[in-house]
Image 1 (spheres, rainbow, N blue to C red):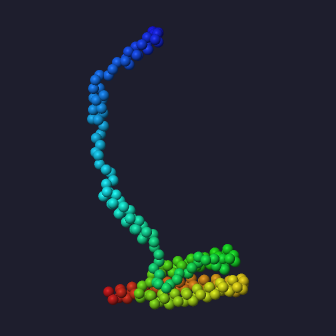
Image 2: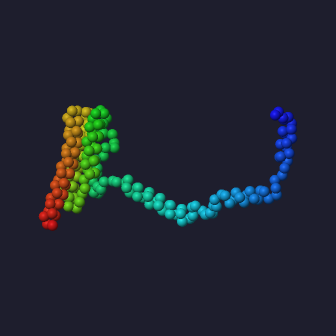
Length: 191
């Protein structure tokens, strides 16, 4: 059983010195080509595909912009209550800042929910005039708070002003709903 390792290597060299039959490589490539799936040569992105993709992308972008850009319809000349700048109440204490932010956020929210129609435009503008007067009074109170320093009367008046403005928005919303209901009932009676 034991063989000389030199004899094994001699036999191995004899096998490796043999040459392949002529045309073997060509036959191998032909069999390989027949077994592999054929590939159609076509360009994936033609000019029309690219143009169509660009048009779709622009359309979707524009649609998303219009969908996400939902600003409330506010009549020209109406100014929504602004709470971006640091107020005197906010400088006094964080608790007063929270109270002021609460009221201003609710006023803005209620104002943005209101739907104005041509029939309710006059009522809406009347309430906005009153809201503007209260806004000017609030600014005057803020200036007084800066000049005179914080007093209980000034702080209370400022908070009451905010409450009054919010209540004004609630009353406006109620009046508009009443008008809407009256209009709907009138239309049902006429029908």
